[in-house]
Length: 105
Image (tube, rainbow, N blue to C red; front, side, top):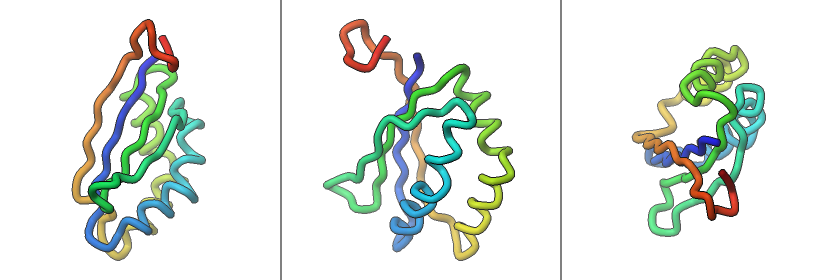
């Protein structure tokens, strides 16, 4: 089981738009591409940071390729960035649960 921890830094003034895109589109589309929502958090130290954890079914690179090619995602993303990009930085780390983790192996 492969988990992925992603950290998004929103562009100035765009956090509400980023959250809305996740709420209305992203989290609904992920499962169709083998990406399962685990949790989403906002940083207490930096109000422009969204951190989330997903679990991948299959190979993460293949899941992301299918997700990014989904016409529903392409349309949602295009509409959401019409006034400029929503993020200034995205970081990703793939994780494998330990044998004593409540989430896996």
